[in-house]
Image (tube, rainbow, N blue to C red; front, side, top):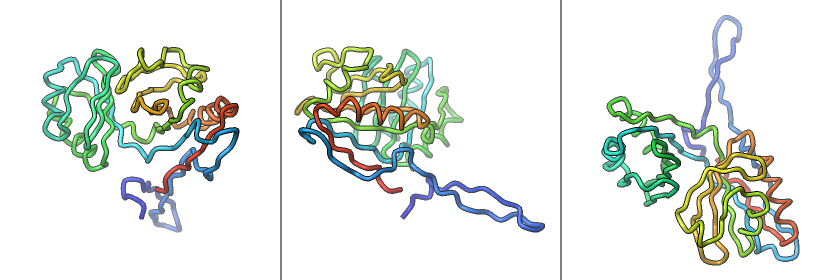
Length: 217
């Protein structure tokens, strides 16, 4: 069943009245799963479920921690690092800039309602971005073809976060796992998602890859 928050409404004029109709959102990476190349397990590309993503700006770290601690159990980390728990993941992208990925839409809505009484500027950017997961034994080799930062496991360990260019597209990259070659979470704007996805497929072609389709809304 489609979650209620994924349903968008608009009105059309019929005769003298307006009738609400439902728009069904389409995922920019809707495609069938498939395998290709010499070893399909070398690189695995999968599309993450729809995001509940909040952009947070605040100059007072104590105010940010007070805003987040009770509903999420999280507090600010150092710059370019992530904290995560079963409720949410908090990435610090700059001195006054964080992004919070909530693991439920209800949590995101609760924080948006709470934002009016805090010093934290909160913006819902869920519909503007898509998350891609890359894993496998050759994933770092694929990313090294176009990443503008060093993603070696010693320079970019688990829970490291960076906003960078990848294949000429601005992304936010997070290392989520170190073993078996590693795993990376890439958040990209919805308008650039298909371009980046095709670029990653081309970069992985020499090793072999598995594509996992977008989850159904």
